[in-house]
Length: 337
Ligand SMILES: NC(=O)c1ccc[n+]([C@@H]2O[C@H](COP(=O)([O-])OP(=O)(O)OC[C@H]3O[C@@H](n4cnc5c(N)ncnc54)[C@H](OP(=O)(O)O)[C@@H]3O)[C@@H](O)[C@H]2O)c1
Image 1 (tube, rainbow, N blue to C red):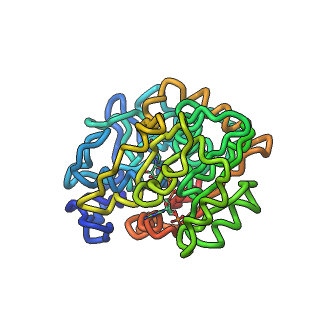
Image 2 (tube, protein in one colour; image 1 turned 90 degrees about the vertical axis):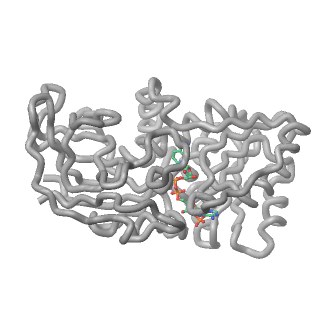
C-alpha cells in the first residue's frame, strides 16, 4: 500500500496531525511515459508550512485533498519512461507518501536522476549538496557578495541553510557570527563548525552578545528568521552592506506577520534582496558540484537530524519551529533495497 498524507484543511498556527488525512492508496502503476519511485527519505522544510497556506507565494499552494508536497530521495521501482531506469536514485518533489508516480498530471518539476556512484550520502542530496546547500550557496555568494574580512551574520545558524552559509563564509575568509537558540547550538557552531562567535537569542542578554560579536558592524546579514532578531541585526549593519532575505521563519505560523521600518535601509544604503533558490535553477549543477567538492575535501560538514517513519511527518515538521533540529531535518521512510 501507499501511505499518503493528504492536506485536509489549512493549518491555523502550528501544524497538527488533524490537518491531514493519512490514507492508504494502492501502489501506483506507471502509465505510458510514467515511472514510480519508492520514497526513501523526505526532506522537511519551513516552506512546507507556507505551501499548506493559501497566502501569495512562489509556487501554487497545495490544494485541499492533494498529497502534501515535499522534497525527497527515492529509487525507481517501475518505469515506462526511458529517462528513468529501475534502480535509479531520484531527487525531487516526491511528496509525503511511500511511492511517487512520476509524470502524473499536475507535476511541477520532474525529479532528477542522480548519477550512479556519486560518493555523497543520499541524505546530503537534500541537505548540504541539495536544495538547502544551494540556497546557502547562491544566496550568500551572489546576493551577499562576501569579501575576505567581512563580518557575516546568519540567523537560524544551526539549521540546514544556516550551517552551510556559515561554513561557506568561513571558506571565503569572513568573520562569521551565527544566531541560534540555546547554548548547545551556539557551542556547536563555534566548536564544531568554526564560527567566530555565536549569539544565543534565548539568553536575556542576546542584544549585548550581538553587539560584542560584531565590533566592526555587519557587512552581510543572511536573514532566515525575521522579527526582532532581524531588526537587531539591521541596527548593526554597515553602510552599503548586503542582506540576502532567505526566510522569515519566526512568522510562518502567524496569521498577521509584522510590518517593518525600512528607514535603516535608506539611511545606510543597504542592499536588500529576497530570493528563492529556484531563481538559480539554471546553475544548480555548478552549485552542487562546488558544494560536493567542499564536502569531499572536508571543508564543509553536512549536519543532519534524521527522524524515523513517514507517519511522524506532521509532528516532525514542528521541530523546525521549536528548534528541535540541528542541520537538515529529514524523515527516513524506508531502507534502500
Ligand atoms: N529562499 C529560499 O529559497 C529558501 C530555501 C530554503 C530555506 N529557506 C528559509 O531559510 C530558513 C531556514 O530554513 P532551513 O530549512 O534551514 O530550516 P532550519 O534552519 O533547519 O530550521 C529552522 C530553525 O529556525 C529556528 N527558529 C524557528 N523559529 C524561530 C524563531 N521564532 N526565532 C528564531 N529562530 C527560530 C530554529 O532554530 P533555533 O533553535 O536556533 O531557534 C530552527 O531549528 C527558513 O526561513 C526557510 O524558510 C529559504
